[in-house]
Length: 337
Ligand code: 3HC
Image (cartoon, rainbow, N blue to C red; front, top):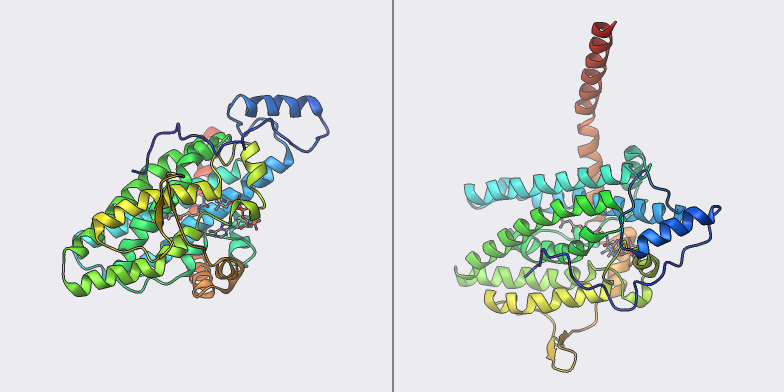
């Protein structure tokens, strides 16, 4: 369903000859453009236009922040998981998300960004992270829906990033996608179990799907016509498939899954279009999306406050790690002397 295959076709018409801003050194630029055009990889030691570097730092750091903030809604449920098995799965999943944040901050560092600055930008509210994590996880069905739908949407968006033109990001995404695939399946399975349970459990799942469906569709970003960065990011081979095309792929993949599950997706306009060979769907509330992205969603303040507290509470661990490493270095240079 969520294909791990990397030969997903690019959105039509958007991968063309790079249209980069002229740089100081036309020779370096034309070498860079030729590599992008040939679908080659750009590595940290290679020359790259400043705009390419900035776009990557922006996207990769927002992605890293999303992984780390994404630990919070589910992390709240670790102590309340309904069984030992579910608790073990949830701990592993939340830990994976922390790991994804680490790979991604490291990928951003290969572009010369400082991890401290990126984290400061998150904690001071200057940096964006995925809108979806500013909604509450109210009950156990929400945890299943975060796995089944939210991670499902995340994978759909992230599989094409495994073919991103920037090597370290593409390589990090291969591992992230494998883990996300497990996250999606465990969420879907948890929902299936609830749907085979009592009427109250089925009602909880339906309610969770009702609350999360539209927010999941908004995860893919604004419509292509309003997407500030898509066109250039696609020319550079950073993004391979547009926001709208990925959203459509997610909807087409999720409708049959919802049928198997026995839930109704809360969109009266959702119907198969024979001519397009895709599902038509209703309009997303973009005003609500932008309010959430700009800091005014239901949980934005709470999420940031929790993140800042966790960071500050962990200061002693970072201090201890640095002190230990300095001691090791001092010991090594004494032995070498
Ligand atoms: N939430 C928050 N901000 C969003 C957003 C969303 N769902 N969608 C778009 N935006 C922001 C963009 O970051 C951009 O802001 P900026 O100009 O201040 O940087 C602005 O809205 C305009 O959007 P664009 O379409 O022009 O932006 P992009 O070309 O960057 O596309 C994206 C947005 C599709 C999210 C793209 O950045 C992307 O593919 N990022 C990598 C994947 C990612 O970050 N996923 C987040 C979820 S990770 C996750 O869910 C964790 C998992 O464990 C569940």
